[in-house]
Image (cartoon, rainbow, N blue to C red; front, side):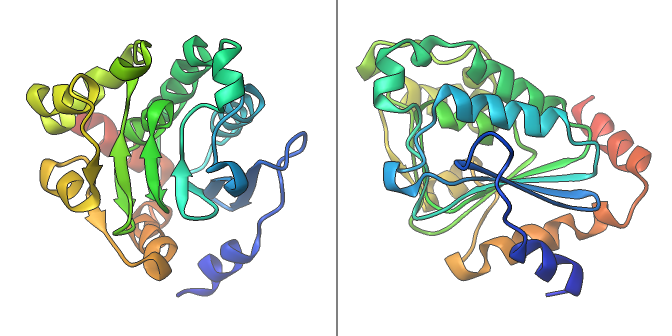
Length: 221
């Protein structure tokens, strides 16, 4: 691993105002890390706001989203969801901020991806995951609607029928299934997750920001 990336891995200062979202930047590379492993990285409104602020305030070339522990995120914090977070516009605001990011965004999924947290990963350009990761989005069972952009992005990746398998039939899919369906782009050993993310970032970090943005827009067009 190159010296630049090795230094980034050692940088894990917490974002001001919260210790549950870690924010580390070196040059044009930013890590945003969910750090609430004792609650399966379930998300509160403060955490969502910190993530939005972190993404929107970043003007570099590569954004990496990951988590601490063996679960990327269980979705909304249960108490917060009961208090209204499940239908908060913050979820859509976060996924929109990630989607609008002009550089390369990578979801480095350290474990299971569930519920509203799926929107973060769906908005990223690339999704890599550990073999133990699973994906489920139980909105039908819980009686909530997914955020508006999530079904569209999911269907664009895996097709309408498979999106219905997850969102309507309640399927919980394995990492291998997610890779075969096109929801994940790569499965890597846990110990190689961040190194793989950094390898994927190398070309963008070495290019001009306008070049990175131009290629991304050409692909979207």
